[in-house]
Amino acid sequence: MTSPRRYADLRIGATFPEEPARYAVKQEVVDAYREIGGGTASADATIAPPTLAAVYIRPAQNALNGPPGGIHAKQRFEFRVPVKVGDTLDTVLEVQELYERNGRNFVVSETRTTNQDGAVVCIGRLTQVWGQEL
Image 1 (cartoon, rainbow, N blue to C red):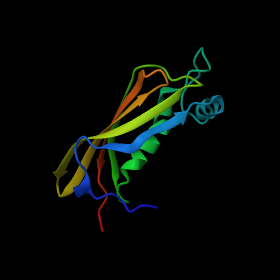
Image 2: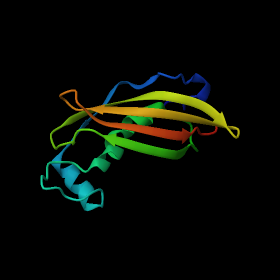
Image 3: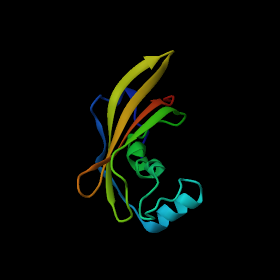
Image 4: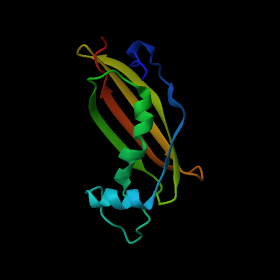
């Protein structure tokens, strides 16, 4: 396990991970996600609930590797193309803003997910309070 990334080492425009985080969308995952409340069924059972984005962007967010104790302050998604069973999704996170407020460090990042055809399926924006560094 690698040491948490230091806030001072972050740069606007930096991307994570080095290679896009890849996620293969499988029918059993879509079905299980719907079953636990991740979304309603559509007329086409091969279309994934939009909220599956919380699953397929996670590896890119984890690659940022902040210290423990960070706070997920806010997040929004822009859905562009439906995600379907059989899609292969690639996600990259880019640091958009770094700022300090009330003695705490904040990181604003954007995830961009594309499918196997290169179409952007989702753009996410996350604001997080960076964890305390020891």
